[in-house]
Picture: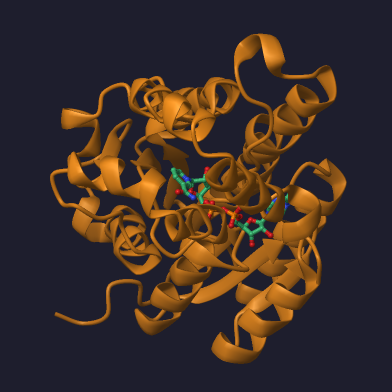
Length: 285
Ligand SMILES: NC(=O)c1ccc[n+]([C@@H]2O[C@H](COP(=O)([O-])OP(=O)(O)OC[C@H]3O[C@@H](n4cnc5c(N)ncnc54)[C@H](O)[C@@H]3O)[C@@H](O)[C@H]2O)c1
């Protein structure tokens, strides 16, 4: 078998790190021309240097900037046949605790941002007569999770995948991937430094581990390629079976409450870690 994405021209959002970066790397290895955007300038440059892909520093919430990047990439690559949306933010917490500003930002990035990139990419795919869209999501969309308000916006990404599957087939296939814990993402890696938190979660996880970015990029690669030519309007659950045993991850996290209450040092460490993954921290170039 030759390379899986020979002749493909792909655009990845959130390509600066973790799953997005792994998609850029895998797609280049499989013969695609690849462009990506990320809000983080330093990460963007690092991926350009490592892969030779076309990189754009842009906020996916900025419709004009997204259209400019996608159109420029399509002009330079001679079209566009694959879109993978990964760029997301997680803010807020329980429904009653989430502020309007947090909800607005999550909608701007996770709902509207995915929408803008899709709107920008579809006309190029229709011109090419072929396309594959992958909306990268979270099991928080289908199972009550740790970030409750985040699940609301991640669920919209599945609806967008299904809608495009109806509107643009047969030329374009449109699917979603949802995952559980990502081992090497900055946002989850920090929490894994607290054994009291990660231990009980992984003990009850069928694989006893999260997925790596590369494993998840391989799922996106499959859906982007012709190997998935019969798959349209589907969600691939790439969580290692986590939602089979942990259908309500939030309930598991609730059990951590007494642990934190009786252990101020652990609580302080946890808060420090969570603070370290706020968008401001993550966005430092
Ligand atoms: N981390 C997890 O354990 C986990 C679990 C389930 C699902 N997910 C999903 O997996 C994907 C990757 O998650 P992650 O935690 O590794 O993400 P992340 O927070 O590391 O961000 C991924 C990339 O997107 C970029 N980005 C963030 N906001 C952006 C914006 N407004 N415009 C452009 N780029 C932006 C970041 O700079 C980063 O390089 C996301 O779609 C997330 O919802 C993550």
